[in-house]
Image (cartoon, rainbow, N blue to C red):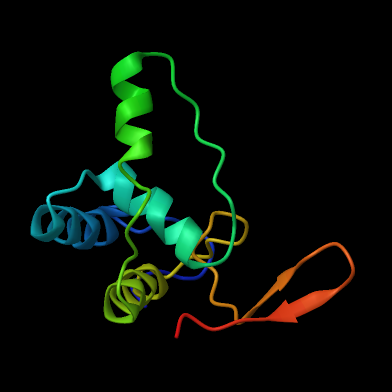
Length: 109
């Protein structure tokens, strides 16, 4: 890791953003679409905001496709290497989700 676990290191989240930009470019998507799709791939339902029609269209571009396991892993590894916690920010590795009656195991395969 590049940080001490509590403070944001010099350069901030740039390495993670570069990975997301590369994935977005390879797929013909935007970084926002990649971020929203990551949340979907983790079994959660994102609730994005949109103030304009263009933002709504961009948000809808996150639907009807999925990141590969490799792309998810690349993003998570980059987040892990930042050296500070993303607790509650979406980049948390898990194979279970809370479904109202307890935890449910899931898999991307």
